[in-house]
Image (cartoon, rainbow, N blue to C red; front, side, top):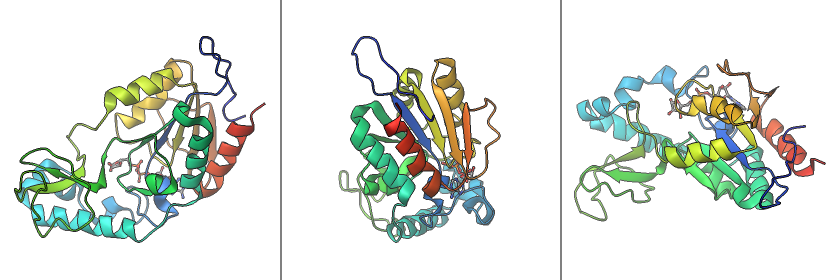
Length: 245
Ligand code: APR
């Protein structure tokens, strides 16, 4: 079974607390490129050039163009059954489910997920390097639009680059420690701190499950490893969790 319901002392609730970590693989079948698969983003682009603060300082236009293209690409695709299944799980579990995504697309939101943390930021926001505001954003940044709050033309993508601090780490670690089930979906487990959450969850007694096209070479083995496309695996897993005896 995917996530045995646990009788929790104290509040008497019988629903499991679940943390789901997602990576680029959950959006692959929507047509959004992953990073490390064949033909992935890091095959056609240099991480140093488009995903580091140094690269942005050296050549901002190339970086702004790269994220403008990705923002437009995401706007032209739709959530797939995996995103919808997680939204269905949230409508059943409410606050007992937290989705932590490494993805910067808004496909989880567009499928209906609300309890969501974008630990690597999001294409749907800009970050003002002058006043640090994070306005919602949907148009190109290459044109150097003015920051809605301070008026400076200093907006960059609100995406966490290599060497920068991810968002909401305390909230994520608290949820991972407290969860009964930790599911990792569509991530290669190459990038920390996300790649360390399975070990943290297991250390605090959670059942861990991986739903991935090919098993990641996780340093800490998952209790349950399922290989296949997310659009098939995730709905089935959600059915199991919701129907667990
Ligand atoms: N269904 C399920 N899993 C899939 C599918 C699919 N259809 N297609 C690919 N995958 C899996 C791949 O097997 C791989 O394990 O998704 C994973 C994608 O791995 P990466 O491309 O490394 O993406 P991710 O793990 O999200 O990268 C993490 O690295 O570059 C940084 O900040 C960037 O958030 C990103 C982080």
